[in-house]
Image 1 (tube, rainbow, N blue to C red):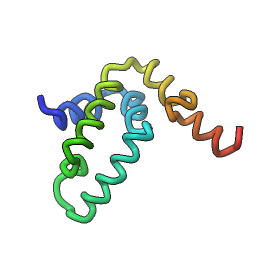
Image 2 (spheres, rainbow, N blue to C red):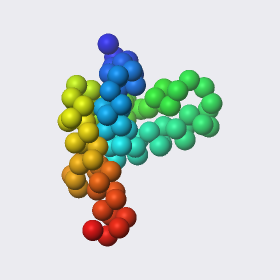
Image 3 (cartoon, helix red, strand yellow):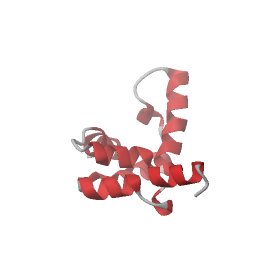
Image 4 (cartoon, helix red, strand yellow):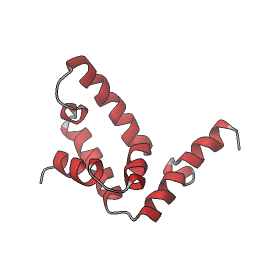
Length: 98
C-alpha cells in the first residue's frame, strides 16, 4: 500500500470521527492541506492529495501513522489537548488570552 492509499484508508475511511478530527486539526496537517487545496482549486482535477510533493506526502503519511490507530479516547484527548497538540482547547485559550 502506498502512502496516499494509506492516508485514504486509515484516515479518510476511518470509522472514528475522533481520529479524523484529531488528524485534520493537527496544525501541520491543516497547513499542508490548505496548500494542497489551493493547488487543487487551480487545476480542478482529482483530489487535493494528488498535488502533494513527495516531501509533503511523507509528512502527511507520518502524521497519518500517528493518528490512524488511536483509540477514540486518545484521539479525543489529542483533539481537545493542550498546547503541544495544537488541540481545540489550545486554540480557545489563545483566543481568550488564557
